[in-house]
Length: 224
Image 1: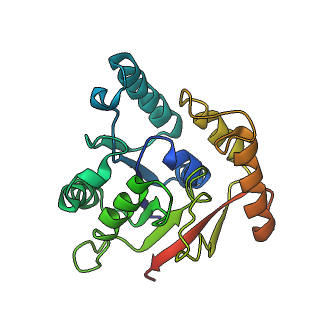
Image 2: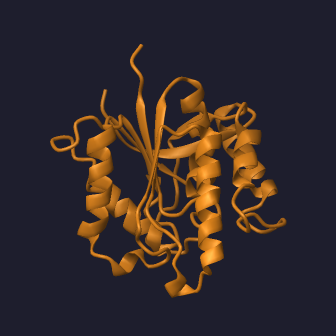
């Protein structure tokens, strides 16, 4: 059996866990190689202390080890400022990773999330899914991110409409355990990034799929 290469692209560390942490854990448990591309980093220029920047690097290392990712790359674009960089700069980073690892499956954030960083990352990744330039890619899946996807109020957006569900019943507890490694990112209910919210969304998606817990995706491309 051939090993499937999977790439998850996260605008910020924690998006990968909130959006598809269970699916990633399942991929790894099934013997697939999962690679993590983080498109932003903290910076003193926007108010983060050097101590916080260093602690975030440690969190990323801890999270990567917990997932057992095959590789991790973090771009040096400043978080919350991705819309200030040329699109070509973001594409260059994504393209390098895609060419290097040749993923078959790519996970990316939903285009209409309320956070502008997510839209910029989606556009950059979408540019790197052309079959004639990146023939390894057979599936492209958009994930939903708690505190971003559900807060979009764009009247022209039809909303996140999943057409793919992944059973993560065996991986939900581990997903939450990993999410807790991100200092200050989880809050108390009814904060949208809370343990209760993660479980609630997994339950709702699971009900649709007929399983205990699930993550849902918009399958944007599939080549058989």
